[in-house]
Amino acid sequence: MPAYRAGRHELGQNFLTDRTTIDTIVDLVSRTDGPLIEIGSGGGALTLPLQALSRPITAIEIDPRHAHKLRHRVDPSTTVVHTDFLQYRLPQAPHTVVGNLPFHHTTAILRHILHAEHWTAAVLLVQWEVARRRAAVGGATMMTAQWWPWYEFGLVGRVPASAFTPRPGVDAGLMTITRRTIPLVDPALRPRYRAFVHAVFTGKGHGLHQIVPRVTGRSGTAAVEKWLAGQRFRGTPLPRDLSPQQWSELFAVTGQRDPATARKQGGRRS
Image (cartoon, rainbow, N blue to C red; front, side, top):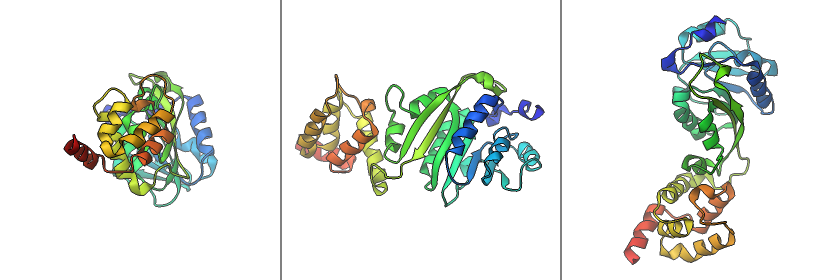
């Protein structure tokens, strides 16, 4: 397959060649709805099998060589667009995102996807450690917690480096993201909620019992302490130990105040 051997290092082109992984991705996508937006179509390893789902596909490819070749191989219902996905504006209608993400642009692409408003599901192949972190294996990261009220992150499994040509230096992870039909936090409060999560993750103190009151200020201490006591944590809970529901509840308990303002008020009273 000469197209796969032509991967360009500067574009992070490690083409998926493992049939089992391709079939798994197609099966996962078949459980979603709407038109498909594919990130990094390359030579069509995913694009062509996805056509069996009989759904419109827009394949985004940054390399003009692969975009040109793929246009001559796809069905009329598939559109190949030569552009950088980071510059591409996702449709203003429900759709599903799928793709084998270039490892060195994974975080930027994930942020681009998460900030878009209308997609309903995503099936993504990323670096293994990135997939683990986004799915909160071993505890939530700040980025995962900041998006949890609106999205569910799932880890499907590990994909060995041997599944790609050329072979990358690390394994990949297959993950899913699903937009919650009922958000845990009002989307209008997203900036304030994300600032709250950032303040808690970066706050000083040994465990949530010390960190959160310092973030919220003294006026919210009693409510926070009561909520923490009701959670029955084992040991000293840290920000990474909270579940999506607990983050949303804690945010509500604090009165949804601006963390920066709360810290200033707490500082004046101390």
